[in-house]
Length: 128
Image (cartoon, rainbow, N blue to C red; front, side, top):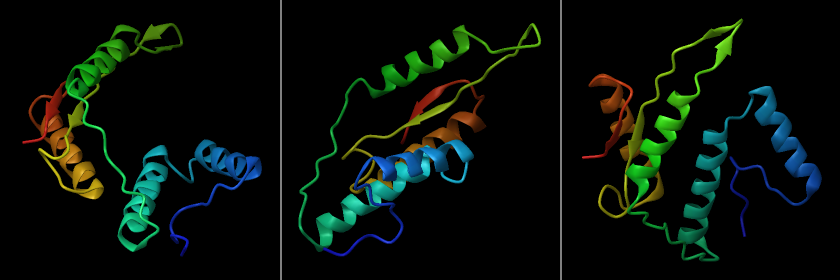
């Protein structure tokens, strides 16, 4: 099995601690980490050993995203005693309705997020 060059292999506690340090330092984002592992899963599915990965379809994804948005808005951060307004937009995409692969799914969700921001912000939209 060839290692995927853009993924940090996790073989033990020290690897997890290194990932945590990179995340905390801002040299690696959670999104980048997820994208790298999705790419690795996709690579392994194509080049073997096959994982036969299945992305779960959650029919409640939009409702869950809206609940998260509402929860964030309900408790605004307070800076020096002043509540700060928060806005949260989200994009939701589903498999196989909006994409046939993992990368395409992420891109579809990003398009929905961009559309949510461009059409008024503070909303969750489903990819079209």
